[in-house]
Image (tube, rainbow, N blue to C red; front, top):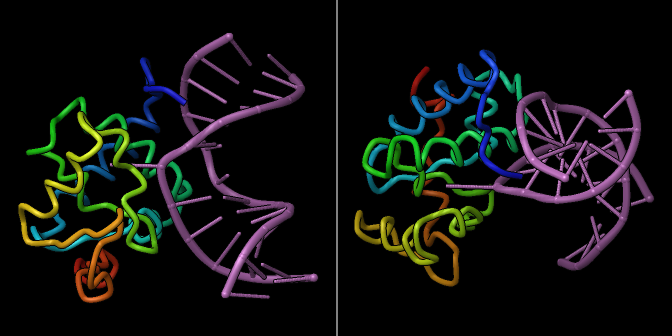
Length: 120
DNA sequence: TCTCTGACTGCGT
DNA sequence: AACGCAGCCAGAG
């Protein structure tokens, strides 16, 4: 799968909603694809959340959309290969105090930030 | 059109 | 506990 060149209106809106939620994740905390999908009403699957981030990073940059704070439900950095370098995602997380060992966020449960709960 | 492939998940076996 | 599988939906070929 590659980047969408001409996203449809609906797709673009979904992408923006995802990016908006990701921007609300506090530094040092992480959330998951599924949590975001659920928060947005699961209109699209969790896969689409990841897809939205592919479009988000090059379009807005790491500073605007902290995509490193989105991991899978097990705390694994499944999206690290989409960053500029293979270690960029891990380094970005460690820079804000999140320890990562073997592609896995340490102390994941207490680091987890659920938009459904926090933005209620 | 059809098929395949995902930065995913949850359920059933 | 490990796997398989279906649902999720948009692009590319």
